[in-house]
Image: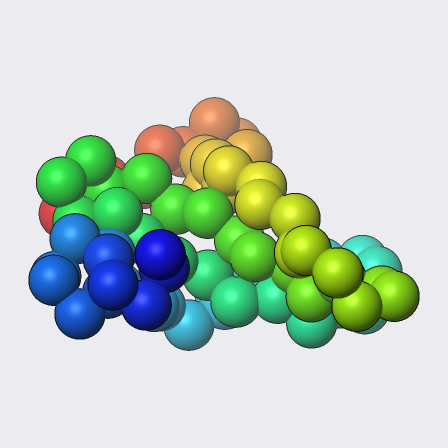
Length: 69
């Protein structure tokens, strides 16, 4: 389903731009229509990975806001 969404241009893979405190293997995806970013973490043990919505503003200092276009 993810591959199809990418092929149809609804979703794009983007570079992981935040280093998290715990080492993990994750891939970030942006929904083009909304600009929302989600991370997909690889499962351990192998099964289904987990999706987490990323709020970039949570990582910015002093209440700065980031506008993603």
